[in-house]
Length: 275
Image 1 (cartoon, rainbow, N blue to C red):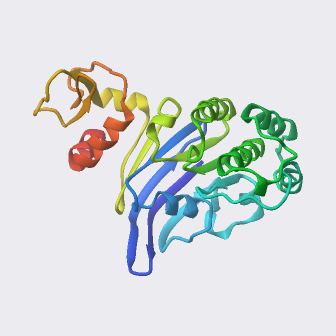
Image 2 (image 1 turned 90 degrees about the horizontal axis):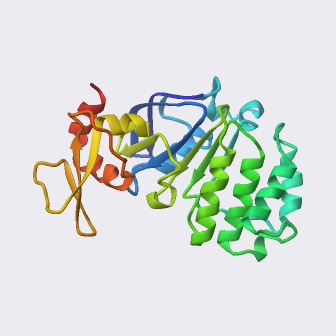
């Protein structure tokens, strides 16, 4: 669906990406991870056409994203981290914007609002940040675009709303669509995201499915620190230790430990996954 080929991008003299390549497929909910400042939001803006690459290409369904053609825009919805709604009732906003999306489903929108416990007649400006976020997520999913980008979707949501968010996104995923969730809150979305993309300065350190990760990396609980492990993460009563999976025993992937393992063993991880 989406192809990034040898892409570079800079803000003035600050280089963010240098020759990165990446593909995204249909039927997936991608988790986009990375430390602050590595370019997660920048990448989402490039994919949505709000920024133009310095070199290389980014294409969605054969559209060059930076051209922002109408036929491209009706296939993508981008929710930024800091969403500020208009001084307008939610249902009026949806009626005005929905006409630009050929597969917009008003019934789906209203049902999702009910699931999120948001009043469709409320004005955005009268709602909390979390309620506004739930309203725009409801609309985004109801557009039924082929690609939905969400930057920190769980920010501003309380614990029950985060649980509902996972359920709603899982239900909205189809074999024809792709959802990308950029997040620092890995635990909020750990059982939802697959595959995992981990960005680093100027590079993509990992783009792999949970199944592929579990075949190449294993996670074990140890009562004491194991210096032979790639990474040890303190846990209740011991450590979560991470190793290359040399004995083909698949274990449950701990995404938080995976993320820290990748950051502290960049070359080793790339060697493991490039074999």
